[in-house]
Image (cartoon, rainbow, N blue to C red; front, side):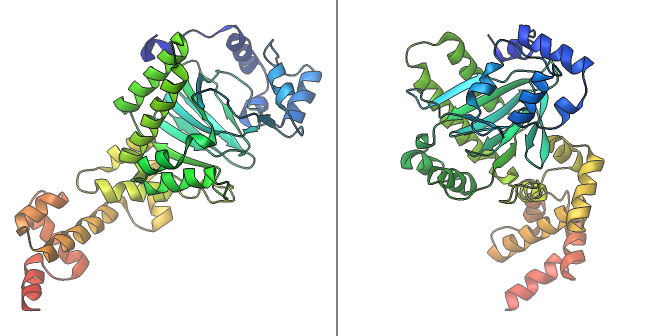
Length: 351
């Protein structure tokens, strides 16, 4: 089945029952994560719907607080599944690394004391043992869960990802069981490479041909490599306490530092899944600066580096940093450094 068809697939029997419960029942069962103890109590009182598959929670609960899922033992050390729509957000943890990819639609990723929305193109890598739940309450969502044993990230695989320092170090922390953030979040937009890899994973789990488990592990490796190559600058990493998603602005500023010479506020907002007004407010509140002033600052900083290198003339530098003409470049440079680019170069030659 093609990815587009998966996105439009009808609800299965369990999903239809849960959807009816969502439409007719209290929102509190979907808006906040629930412990397994609370889930069990609600079930006894007949307040929530249960199906033939609901025993999964009971079988996997260890301490009543959450559901503990054992490490995946596939020969390829990896497994992929489609997340069920309209499932209750029951807190759970597991021994393996989980990657959540939103191919379409949206959901809310919930933790003990915080939650955040995930939209199409978002990728969240969850550390083992982080207690979390996903609430998906729409028909159009296609959410892939990639589950990988920690030993999958051996030294050779980590070396492959070494070009992306943040992700390699995060996976290394997981592998060696060091203290780490509960998740890393990436915004990838409509990346055809990631969509294609997701399609290939779905094909593998549908057809289950010879050695499909190993094929899945290779596809997940490619998926992570694409994240490293293209999106590490947009990574959102919460504080190690995991209480708040307080590094959103870091991902935004990192993205601007790479794309400063051709990006607009509207394009940046679309990339991160926000409205231009909201993104503008976040930037101003967190930095005290406007979007345009941050772009201008980055442009003149890069211009300074190019001028010091001495390989380009002023017209070429203006084009390189994204200024449409030299007068525009002159105005920005003088506003920051107090002199014109030409005067700066003359001073540079004298010294």
